[in-house]
Length: 124
Image 1: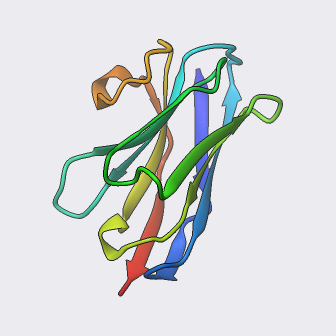
Image 2: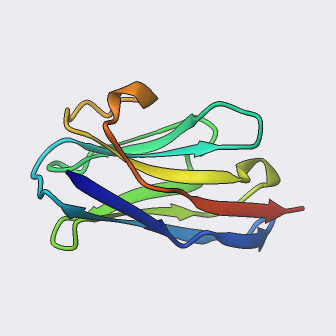
């Protein structure tokens, strides 16, 4: 079992920045993919970003490319999402997730472990 705990959400204004963190515990792993998804009220889960755990290669949704940066700290078993130039449409609950396959999948169903989510609200 892998437990994922997100933190760092909050209420900010348009144009501000936030840094989300996701700490993994339980069963250790040395490969796979860590991803960030988000869900706005009344909408489906949306892929945001993913990182290959061993190699550090990343993939981003077009809607956040150039504004968001995902990174990982293997020693701390943690991933981060640096969000700059935030917009009201970025408002959502942000979830961290793990896929045992290092494929940088954009598909929610490929991820087998999920955190509880952290709320990000961007006011205009």
